[in-house]
Image 1 (cartoon, rainbow, N blue to C red):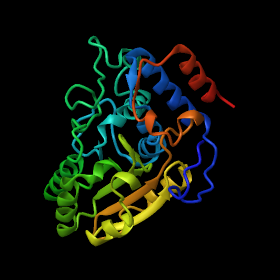
Image 2: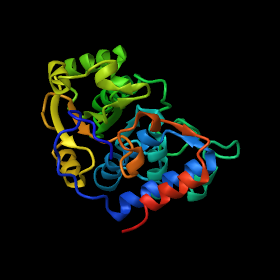
Image 3: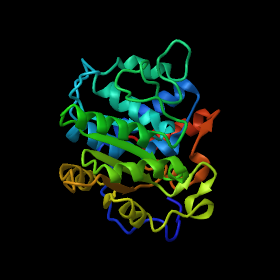
Image 4: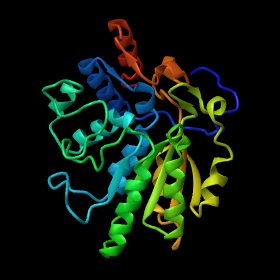
Length: 282
């Protein structure tokens, strides 16, 4: 992994286990079929989504619109390959759909589409809207006296958008303890490092100022993620923000912390071979 001084906390992250490697191999499978994809943005996200769907969320893959389900909105829609892998793994749609990624005969496109892909809670990709959508879901759950939880996953570059902070201000006002904002803080956005484009620090203090109970974790440490999510709500009268410190491109050494791997197309066969070798079982 390239050295990027000062952007990642000194976590002692455990090695990726076989399930995390398998989900990454599913990513490669999709990109091979579609010929393109947001690779780095997917790889930083997998442990967050895996923990939510394996251990936290209440859902029924056979009845995706079950009213009492928890909601997970992937606001950083360009990371959808990770979400599609998880949804297929959980049985929301057949695994064969993964091979049709970004093809006209399939249901999976370059961003999530509500109503087309079972399990997708909102059409996202126009960045900055997911927290507002989640805010409405959380308010609806309260009004209907449901105990559903709402999780909104955002990218760090995405939270440059002013609409994110408008929604945060409203969520804090309404004391929505059933709403959790998750920030995939990999420190890189589409055009470069966040610290060079629009420095987000002090990020935790920003969320606290908007009346969110805020926690920071290693976004690739499954035990740390599970421990944080199991504690929810962190406050009885505040929404929660969980800042997940992640590595863009995690699991493929030549893609880690490299902005050019935000999105790739026309990938050569030998590069796919290198990716598959990096993700082979130990």
